[in-house]
Image 1 (tube, one colour):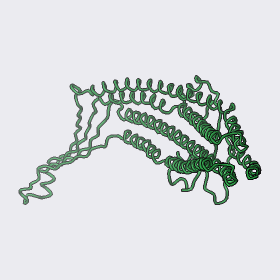
Image 2 (cartoon, helix red, strand yellow):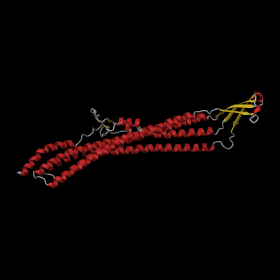
Image 3 (cartoon, rainbow, N blue to C red):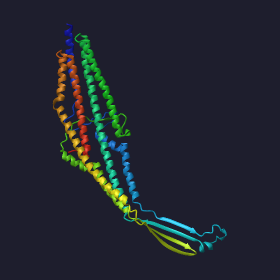
Length: 440
């Protein structure tokens, strides 16, 4: 009679357990297209999308802002490079009777003293100023592309960390659902134990499993806090509130572009490749400047002289004779620098192809894993747990079988979420390798 009462209690609680089991599986993302962003409730923490996170990072990241000042510094150097030499002013007075003050008179100064006033200017030969300006402008172009490459890296880091937050949020939701669902199992088991239909040892095993779920829940909460803090570092701490959150889901968006098309896209868009190619131009500008510097400048001075009541003028010219120093060392150095820049440009182009190949391979590998999960493994793990749990409550399966099914189901769910996150990260890596967020 006592055993029959226990079975009746278990059967009455079974529908609630099965309903809770239906809630165990969180809704999976749709096959294509991002999930619609929920409207924030009044007073809720601000939630940002991936595109908003990228925008905030580009506007507020302090490392990027510091890098952008290098462009302004180079533009200031363009102003310096375009400056002309200043004229020089010189003057002197001679034959003053400093040790015979009694001879000082207007007549003495007009007829005995000598005054000289001169103005001079250095005429640069070889179009030095034009070459300096062009070299400075070419260096500014290189710096601008390098800053663009910093932006490319920042966008990837921000996207990668945003996905890490999505994974942490998904893991947290799974842990919360596991705790809530398994709590129903604990309640049923306690009823069976009180009815004498379950041993105390089996009840303790079930409670220990609940403890594991609760421990996983605490770990998932900490992981999300840490992921949000790392994301905020990229966004700039002042750009978001302390309680900010992200909106979005782990999602699968297929990429169909061929690898050759992606390599061509990278060759047109990668800022580091553009910077390497511009560095060759800048090196050639430096060589032209060094050759111009090898031409000696002409100094011209006009001098006005007043001597013994006579006013006169004179022109003076001076120029270095390029006998020993023709700037040949710097000219040779810049020629080697051109070769260096050309080799670095070739190396960068090869690195771009390597990055695209690696990213494309990682994307295809992760895509295959996603297809395996979406092909039935996720549903099969869920169905296996439901069958085992139903059989366990009917006495047809052992406690060990039930707990093993619980662990298998949770491991499957965690692996699926991690596979989605890895695929999304691979897409972002491909975008970084190509140099644009618009993939074919």
